[in-house]
Amino acid sequence: MASDPKLHNVYLLVHSDKLDIHWPMAAGDTDGFPADPRQAYHTASIGKAFTSVILAKLVEQGFVRFEDPIANYLPPSILKDLHTHKGKNYVPEIQIKHLVSNTSGLPDYYEDKPRGGQAGFMDEALANPSRFWTAEETIAWSTEHLQPRFPPGKGLHYSDTGFNLLGLIIERVTSKAYHEVLHDYIFTPLEMNHSYLSHYSNPAVDNGLPVANLHLNDLKNKAGRLPLFQQFFMPEVKPFRHQRICSPS
Image (cartoon, rainbow, N blue to C red; front, top):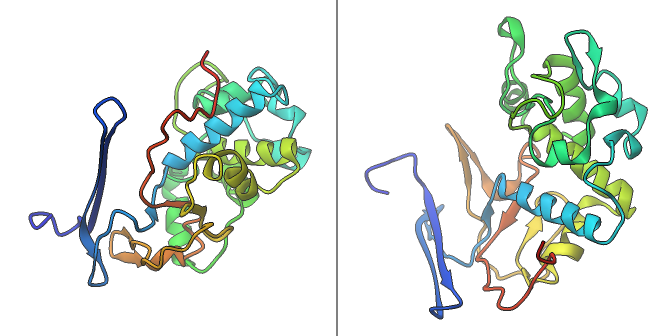
């Protein structure tokens, strides 16, 4: 870490049930506090894995099918102009499986740039870092400023927009807020007692350790206080011995 001033914290877990190994490690610091493998830290797109597992559980329980059109679960206000490619409306053809596999053709509001040199989402969000962006607002921003890449199922393009849509579908199917479903389906059964969704929920157990700062260029986000970063925070992952979330296929 000393050779890279942009690297502030590192967390590593080496675990093997077969070899009976569980080695949690951490390096760096949080405002002078030495990094601790038990402290919470921003997990970014690992949250997409949680979302996908929840969808798989809902499929397993018979509440949804991967082949279901997303139009079955989302309101017209979200779907309007969501996916128009070369003059054709492809919204009726988007299925849940397309969102999970990043094959919907929808743009990525987080990193894709509008045409004509306009400011991207991150530029706009960082210009007003206190604004709280809802999933619906990020989808609306994507629809207004970005263009779909291809028809559903005809390519691959990483899309945060698609996963925000999945979060709304999960809420519709379960009649619960997304963060509640996270605790019900993932955190509680796996005893992830220190994990939570920043700005929405709290850990079941507070271990008293500071949350690792999230650094973006010269911006330091203390403990997820900026509403821009409404993502997962998660500390040490416990060994899930003989526990299974989804049935083997």
